[in-house]
Length: 425
Image (cartoon, rainbow, N blue to C red):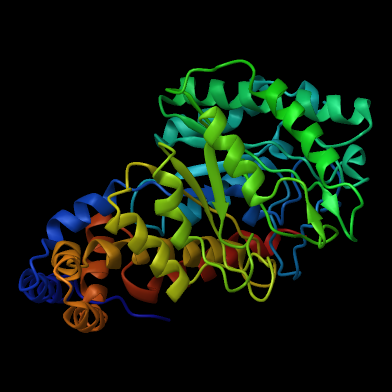
């Protein structure tokens, strides 16, 4: 059992930390106010291993793989929402939930993905309303017979292509309805697995087909106050090692040309290539950006997000560029080898910790040193900042937000596992 620190001790540590940061010109109260305004989009698919409610029983196609068999996977929508509620109760702040189309609730009837309607997500919308949170949405272009060839929107089979165009249009309409109902724009993301395992003879053809499909999908301009469209690129995947139709350059160009959000996934690039450096480049030309924060280990393995150097670099770039209002932060990972509620909590708290550390950085001082050419002092100050008492500020934030301080949340997850998860076969 973990022991929570006394409230008085947390408050005293924060007071000392606040004074320390003030020496660097940083207002910790203001940093916490900005952090509290950040709503991370928490992905529902961590809770059930991307299985969904279509009755397929697991992932297929699309180059997505979930490993592990930890007991307690959510088997239906009620269990999944209960699990999300538990996870959110252990995370400071008010956040969003991110859905995939395969989480539709159709009352036991078979409804094809191109026929999905907002009514199939009414329970999710009611749940979000009660909690006063927003929803985001994703079309699901995998785990379906019509995705078995490895091609969806870029398929040369007109029947297949048309089916997925209709699914993408249906997804936009669902996202629009969610945004209207919840009073918060629904970021509706489009990612497809289309690509080739081995070297293709024609790279041009599928990209021309994909462009035609996207033109049809986004032909109708929808209210951006309710819906924000995003397109997501990838370097490679399982089954698409040699060629991905929707590459970074392809979607970068399409997003610029059609004023869409570009989605950058932290696991979708070369292992030595980080998305933090891309943020300012993209936002020089686009108004807004979607991030899917993940953790790749040697490949796009979607490990649980931790407080790594890569994560800190993403957060620092958002804060240093004053992009907090222009970047939508979503999580995208799935690990079935550990407790799934804990995976949500670990990843989301890590994302928030990274943002706090970035918000506590003396950005103005660092940028002034750089502008004056004093790179020696800039590097020295960056190193000094690493040992400033950010953890004391984080603990105080958790205390004020009414969530467990320190590792005591682990005991709450253990209790939930004993009382709830252990009953699931």
